[in-house]
Image 1 (cartoon, rainbow, N blue to C red):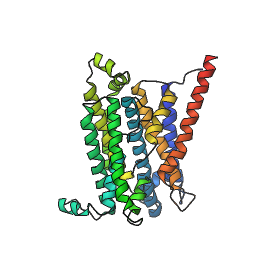
Image 2: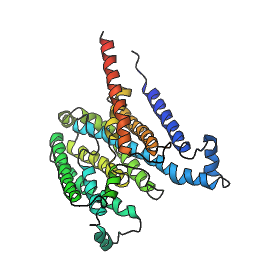
Image 3: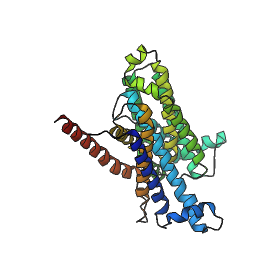
Image 4: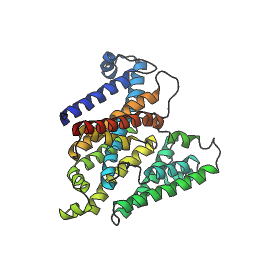
Length: 346
């Protein structure tokens, strides 16, 4: 069977991403025709209602979905390479558990006095949630990265999992002794959502995500070497501990920031890298890293559109929608790949 050229894969992915973005901007409880989008964006005479819906609601929502998909898709590819585990994803080292612990503490009001004492208090209700999530994930991230120089990939994975389990245990104890009313904010955060992100938040999310993606992508050659194993990397003169530390730092900063603002977004970090590999059939990270970013953005945008449920007055849980979409896609691609291998061997 003829192999699809990488350029064709990238063109198809980018075209699909652009189409999904247009669909996300135009469809909803209020339909906005595609031909009116330029006039709404750039004309002073545009309908103020449509302008508000497009600029203040749909565009930040769509851009956030794209950034989340890019960051977690790339992070998943890096973690699967570093840990040599096909089930690895950005949160496998306990980042989401640390963020959950911080959010629980803030949502129960236990961190309000600390925020006031440090001058970080804000009238924005979501501010304490973001602060708690970022501090919790950052502390756990620092702990795991601190161990990364002294351990191999297997031991690092175990330490990350144990740190995540410990945080989960503390969260479970705190949640157990609180009423459902007190935990509503925390529960909504765990479902994952892009609705709370505004234009004030987007520069922070974009700068961290794009900066982290650039840092990691520029080290694609190191990922190719690390993919061959630690022994091979040492043979060619690569400092495995140093490279692992740099890559883990980049992934952790991206994942902790996205988790703080959008909740623990599941599944994208696992699904996007596998789809990228299946489409490209390559081991070169020069191709796999950008493909994982685009694939993650595409999956995220599709799930975000369905989660908005434009045909319904309700908003669906994003994490549930992402899993329901991504899991069948990955399974079908894996079966197709297996079938193609059998046909080629006959």
